[in-house]
Image 1 (spheres, helix red, strand yellow):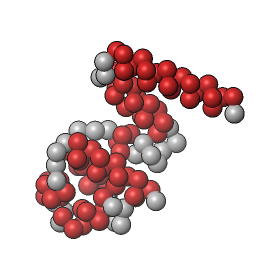
Image 2 (tube, rainbow, N blue to C red):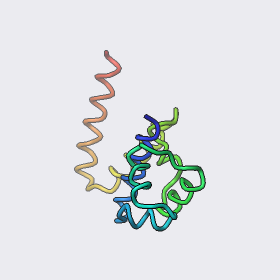
Image 3 (cartoon, one colour):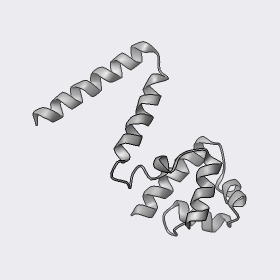
Amino acid sequence: MVQKLIGKRIKMYRMAKGLTQEELAEKIGLSRNYYSAAERGVYSLNLDKLVEIINILDCSADEIFADVINNGYKVKSSLLSEKIASLPKEDQERILAIVDTLVTTTKQN
């Protein structure tokens, strides 16, 4: 399960960088098939390859491990904050009102 979650995050950042599986696999010295299987969580990547990927994708280990570490919510919160900050003020206010309503409703339950 952990491998699949990490692979999903790597895929998300790879695609955001506009890299294909083949391009990233070549950069880290793996076959496309092996890399593809690792991204799907079938195989694990060793620490050296993970560090290479993180550096190539220009992201942090926290971002890659956000779904599998206990404090991953902090990373997700920060990423969400960045996304909201990039929107027009009216959209920011609308989203924050929705989040506020969700938090209030959750606390009541």
